[in-house]
Image (cartoon, rainbow, N blue to C red; front, side, top):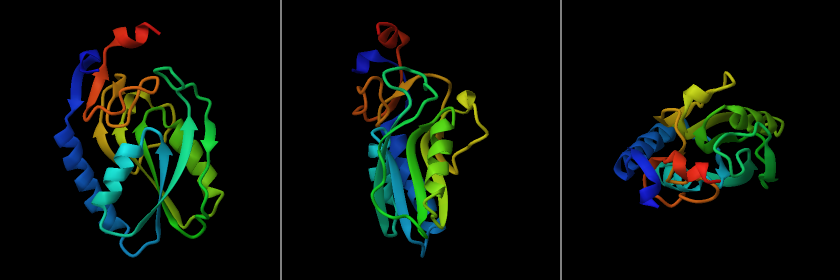
Length: 180
């Protein structure tokens, strides 16, 4: 797998440090609140697990499976919800967690859908923020790393379901996805 990586953008150590910083900030911002972390699977699983451990407050976790990429390197713009949250979030403070904010469409659409369930609040957190690809005015409330307009994998981020288990975030060589 490592031979398919053009460049490491964010090391394992940088990820761990930033996740701890975000956890401390979220602990402060959500102190005394009834927090439900809604995790967008599969990509955000690594990040959300580590982030919840870095938060020193009670956190409930709910999961959604949403697809907008398929096996492509770009969002299709069409969002498919494969699994919705199970618990009632009415009156609770929701923290929507994803691995990357790219176009902003997924976050914007999921946030709109969750607002219909009457939470007390909804904030968003993304591990990676690729502002160059934003097609909406939507920005995450919290983000880990600003990244360039390159296709990245690792630490949950994938290409066609692979590379999620890399401990770092790296740029995938274009030759890898050009074969598809």
